[in-house]
Image (cartoon, rainbow, N blue to C red; front, side):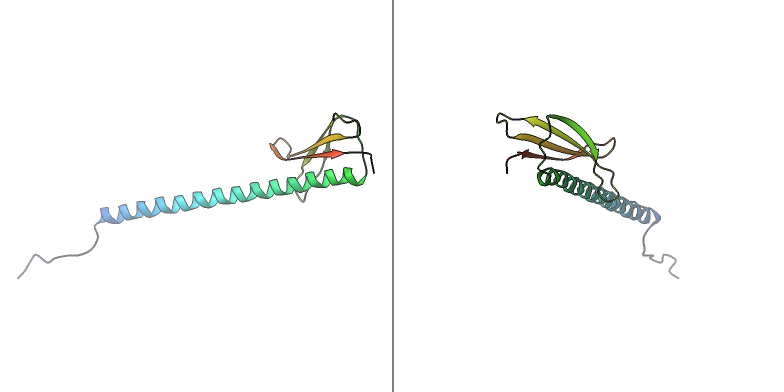
Length: 123
């Protein structure tokens, strides 16, 4: 009789190496999905912040406001995001114009949007 039967298959070491490789690949995919989700949320916040800045600047245009030079803060929420709008008004070389800068921030967060415009009381 032939006692030396040839056996085919994977050894335990080969199976463990394959599992480690698959695990590393899955962890890399999970990391990529997390980064993509965070990037998408950050882009959404920046887009809404820009809308808030545009809204504030258009309000000033429509009111024909000509505020004095200085700095002020006011809430300007968009959806569930509690944005704060910082309005900076500066005099220009021409007395009939003022430069306005609107910055939008989250509480205790970085500046998400900045918009510049000119205001004039002239019709």
